[in-house]
Length: 316
Image (cartoon, rainbow, N blue to C red; front, side, top):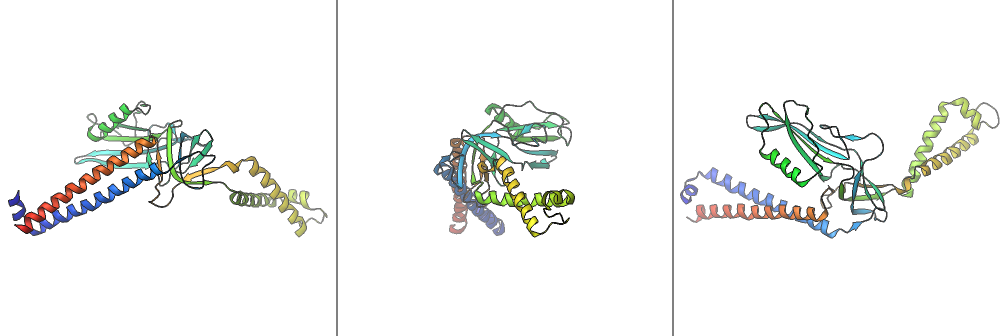
């Protein structure tokens, strides 16, 4: 081995040493990143939605869908809160991704004190279920049975995705990750509540919309606000219309109960990560610490090899 290092072309030698040095730096950064996330999760107390302060907050609850058009998984067409999918095609050198995507729809986290809207954009998400199966078309045609999020099914899917090649003629691999309504949910991110300033802005916008609608029906506008009967709306009458629109907008916004609206979203900074997970908090912390340990081990291994190569080459 010493002979191989000594006789290695100089360019090749320095490529190896520099590559190992870059690997050390990447491993050190990765270790710090994951240790930092584990520490943030450990140090951030869990808040109840009703009493949570504004800012960086940790919530625990269950996932739920919002009212309106449902979010459907693109491959299995099942209602969910969030999904991520990937379609890969088998080539001579392995699997290549032909299509992928994830949900950007809003969903809810609920606890005994209330509910909070989650905007998943920019979040690091750990789903409750991961399914992998194979087929012969670029569109998923066979729908696997739901595993119910069991750990055994998750391990099987993971093993299949790593080593499985599918049956003969099945040239496509489908992967779908999902969070379903009712799944346990952990989330940490930027918490905001709908305050009085936001409410007044909505009332103002709503009143403007009402006035635009009323102006489109001029006869009705005259019937309601032309008090002197001159077939035109003067400044005093228009002020009366504006006050009426404001009162109606205030009533309708109050009926919508927006005062209890809360949101959780991306913080915009890597120092305060936005994390959504169907795994319990202690499992997240354990996973981040294991990744950090593996990265630190890689740092020492790559650094040791680089140091040994330099010692053999320069001191011999």
